[in-house]
Image 1 (tube, one colour):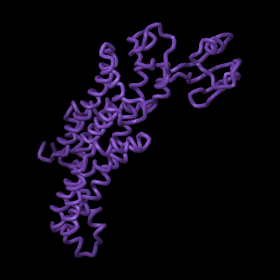
Image 2: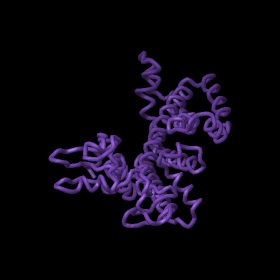
Image 3: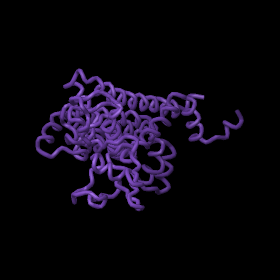
Image 4: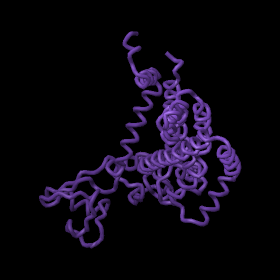
Length: 343
């Protein structure tokens, strides 16, 4: 007990977070899976990681090689799934080191004897979609895209929300009144209709979605920051800092902002899960990323169109629910960790 009393507030919060085993283990599992997905090209690819051909080493994952460099006939890039090329690279002392899953998210499986979408097999562990692409590869790349999209959208929305809440809460008066009326008008705009309109005007892309969703995703967070600044701007330490000549920027950044980050940090995991759901929903409706981009929502849409292909919906549903559950558990643990009323 005496050792705990000498811990800093941050160390106590970490101990409270570790006490929530469900959130603590979810953080490690989610982090491990996410880091693995960052190396998707190494885990799942239709190109070998390393090729040993005629006493020389090649790295097809990182460098494009012509088929003629391996004794082939064409000047185009070598197709390492072609039986003729594979035969060249696996005989006479030649060999190649392949990824765990020998498919990219765009690779079409031509060797399957079953019609697409094909069920799981030794060749395609989770089957193929309606175009013959490997479902496992689409899930790996789609999971990475969803998490990176959600983190980027969360960071942008958090920064805008913090800045807007700081200005409203600290200065108050007419500035606060103007911002509140602006938020009421801006928040009443039909976000889905705007997405449909912009999707019909511009070429769909991940960055277009981030820009459009960031325009609306900051408002909820700004209310919490505004409330914290309104509460703290009249406290004694703020008045003392102002009397000592500290600028408004210094007071906001050095004194008020650190004490106002509790709701921001608490809602971060929930905002990430909300962003994942937003991207999945838009892709499911056909308003998200381009068709060739690996997407969890696009796989769910294929599962709806192919009811008998249970592996499409079941595998995608498992990845999506697993990721969201871990994020929710992490969010609950963070909320309890920042609650100073807990022992």
